Image 1: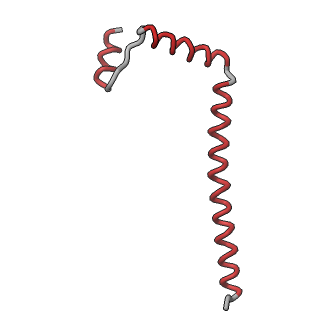
Image 2 (image 1 turned 180 degrees about the vertical axis):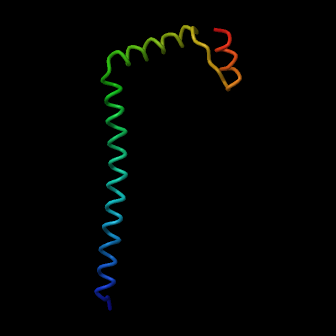
Image 3 (image 1 turned 45 degrees about the vertical axis):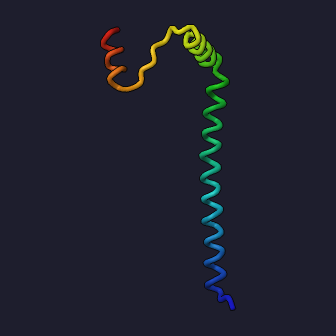
Length: 76
């Protein structure tokens, strides 16, 4: 037989679970908002397209680790 205490505890646990789900949804919505802002920025998207074209043409340098990055920056 459930006591009032058990019922209240169950309700509180349900609220905690619901609040946890809301927090996860809020984080997902923030990520979606960031993506939408990025993809709606025409200058940014053009920059990405230019970068992809440079990669295809072999005009970029790919650094595999930090020492290669240091070497690249020192060479500039």
